[in-house]
Length: 340
Image (tube, rainbow, N blue to C red; front, side, top):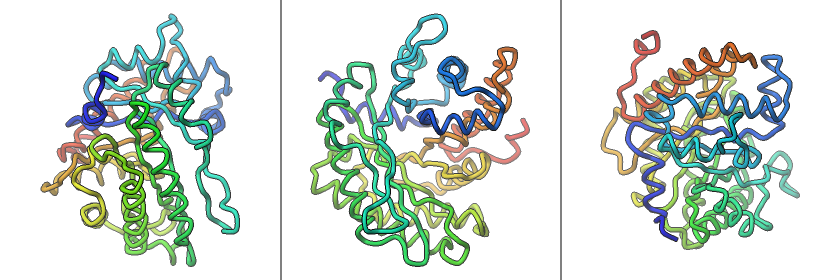
């Protein structure tokens, strides 16, 4: 294979750029469309994604890669141009979500393990031929008074590692996404509890990646930020930044190509502010950037609202959020720029 994994990974975490997560499943995008009163048809899904991918200034200046759902990987724009070609023409890397979702973990109430390893080698070969050069797999970890259990952490870390090396075998860069969801109850999900669990999860993930012989220079980590639960948000931007970076420095080897955070239910501006504060700290062994879905798209979706006459408004909204996060990826964002 002519493309080196390290080179693709470096392109994905290029300075001042980040990853657009446009890999919502058909069911998830239905919820998004329901919120704006739009029918969940293939044509509407295509039109919405085409609006984003044809936002030339955002795609060229702020987006390094795009995670696609399987349907979208094979879709074409209204004029017949494959979406993969639109993404490549903008200088971004096409990617693909490959997991089959988090399913209940047998014997462990309230916990899940992500499925999708069966047949993955063959699917990755097909995705490579379709133009994908990176993939994403999400493991989901819940916090409660008794959770997570060590077994749930191990099961998800093991699956992430098996997925990662299968990707690398096929010439595809794995995004390794262990997400600690931020909807724990106030008494269970303080920022310190989140830090403790994040450290345990990342320690196990990198232990499994090492045992699986994953090449760290050819992977990107997509973690949660260390943040208190959504139902009791009290931590300052600076505290989130400091505690997140402290945990990452304890657990993530310097060799990893880069870290692209998920937004995890934060508001658009929260996700941007936290990322910028981390980068402003400096002295980081890896690039820190974004891999946002809703935090990049929510304003654009609302502005578009399924109407052809609103495409330009939707693109302006997307371009603004992409630019704000590109500034955050270099530590140069400020709240004043939001109104500019």
